[in-house]
Length: 285
Image (tube, rainbow, N blue to C red):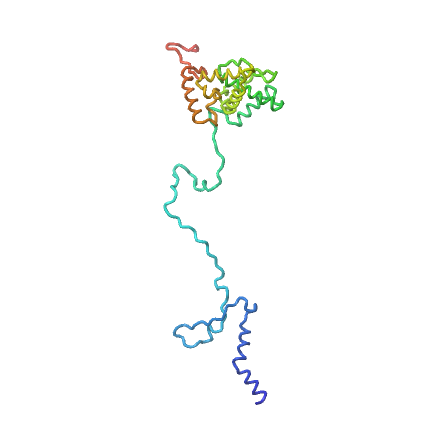
């Protein structure tokens, strides 16, 4: 056999043609993203494989429609849900208000000063009596004297303001403080109801029969306590004690009962309405 016949025989052999065809069909990435070759069956009723459809063809790794992502399944709501709000009462979305972060809210009482206002008034009193630049122990002692005076004398608007406050050897006129407070005396002391009770506890706890000053303050507090039926809670004898924020239920009941005893027997002239006698005629008429 000649050389030409042998070359023709090699070229016509199918085993030598497959590597060239596989090399042409291989992708430029070296078959990294290729799937194994799987023949595709011809449609039913079609004989043969015209054009070699599906035979020896490499299917891509990424589908034609691209990469899709599925949302995670959520829990299915069961029931009718919460009771909706009445849209006739609220003209805004209250459901959204519950989702948003809550804000601080509150309201002031009409019978007492709020903490900010009471603090400004007390600071002004310190400045008027001339102790605002003194050390803290002097200012604290003045506040205790002011609170104790309120506990034993009350906050009646008809008081003439007789008496004085003293801190060490310094004396302060009580009338000056009364004039500064004016008609807001009760509202001012109600803001300090808990602090006044703490001062009364300190007076009761420091009782010493051999100390005349300590025994005198103790006796004054107990006198008011017995008159108001608060001998069990003598630290709550001040007029503004019911405005305290740290009172127990038993203490509040005792205060309510003491007011039932005191109020019917005491006339508050500041709140009394003056009734014109029958048949009288005003002066300007």
